[in-house]
Amino acid sequence: MILNYDGKKTEKEIIWNIKECNLVSIKGNPNSKSKLIKGENIDVMKYLIDKKYLKGKIDLVYIDPPFATKNIFRISENKANSISRCQYDGIAYDDSLVGAEYLEFIRERLILIRELMSKESSIYFHIDYKIGHYIKVLMDEIFGEENFINDISRIKCNPKNFNRKAFGNVKDLILFYSKTGNHIWNDQKTPFSEEDLKRLFRKVDKAGRRYTTIPVHAPGETQNGPTGHPWRGIMPPKGRHWRSEPKVLDELDRQGLIEWSKTGVPRKKIFADEKNGKKIQDIIEFKDPQTPIYPTEKNLELLKLIVKISSDQDSIVLDCFCGSGTTLKAAQDLGRKWIGIDKSDEAIKVALKRLTPKQTTLSSENDFEYLEQR
Image (cartoon, rainbow, N blue to C red):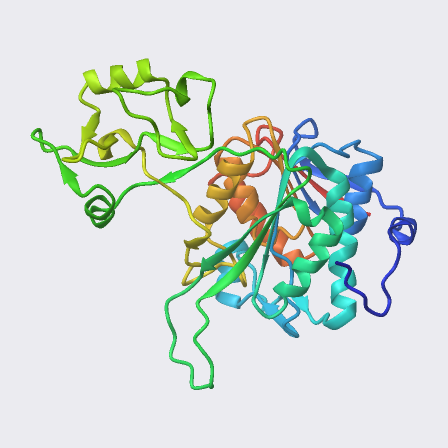
């Protein structure tokens, strides 16, 4: 599906119209792969492709761009003081683009992002319910419908009592795509709650261990192999085969891991204390800070989860709308290299403060470099 609107350019026109830019190193470690860059992200990304040879080198992209809200977001004087000891009420970012102009702004940047992404790369696009359906169509066009993985509903806040005639809004949306379908995936689990244990592992053995049971057969015909042969004088149900060879089932039974029903149906025991938690689903709860240091600042633990799942230790993580640097902080804490881009003076001040250890200034000992577009 293609989204058509006025002013939509070809990809060649987009690339052709990006102006030449130069990045000047201000401070930090110029040999580090981690870089905080003040500049217009589309120009900087083209520079990273052409001059830094980073095409196909980024394993994970997370972006939380403007949402077409028609608002101007400011950082308050009190929060500014806590960050940089300055007296101001500065503009954090301008979110005034709407309609076709906004869509083309996003599309241009997604095209550059795609060029930077590696074959094992993923992109997480954080957006809201008002504009997210348009972004989904844009991303289908740019990355391919076949590379769409999930839309993740993120519970962002506590319920509110709105007076308007609508359901309350406590969530936003993260669109998750792969570059090729062969993306990095480090599966993460969440611990079982007491309620989970009682619901999912209803049975208790003589030793007090909670367990459940699953069939020892699976869908699919296997006529010639051992998993299609009789076991203990019984055949698997029609259209199914044993999950393991009969000799393996014999060993499981010897270990007491097969439970037989009164009617002679075998099932395998699964113990709660042998499972490391439950799979994370596509509805997650990571509420944003109640007193953010930067407008629309996202939950650090949410970003750490994304970084853990979709990058490796040797990966580079990109956030080209880096704002207060939450993505960069998550990547840094987890030992990944990162690149953050933002054109806002206020964003850069906040990000530098978060990324630089207390009581120190950014120097070559800190493993990142700060650059500015000139």
